Length: 125
Image: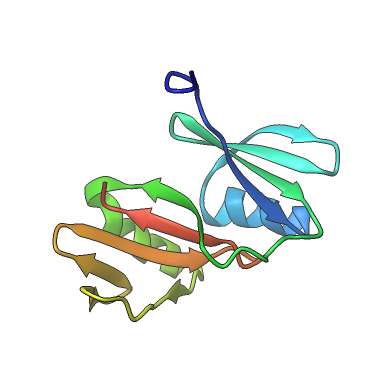
C-alpha cells in the first residue's frame, strides 16, 4: 500500500532559527518551504527533511535520520567537522574506529547531533 509512496524524515526542534541555520548553513540543505514559525522543509537529494517546533525536541536518543553519502563518507565527515560539527563515538560490538567513522566490515557510519540533540547518521550506502 505504501511501498511506492515517498516518506519524509521529520525532526522535532525547540529553536526553529537555530535549526534552520544548522540544516541550511552547516549541513547545506536547501529550504523549500517555511510554514510560518512552526516548521521548515529542506531538500536533501531527492528527499526532504521536515523540522518542526515541538516541546518534545531532543527526547529521542536513537538515530533520527540517515544520510546515504556513499563513497563520499570520509570527505563529508571532514567537511562537517571543518564547519564545527562534533561527531559521536560509540562503543559498539564489532565496530572499529577510523577517526570519527565506525567501521563494521563493509558498512561505515558516522553519527553527530543537531542543536536539539537529534542523532543524525552518515552512511556509506
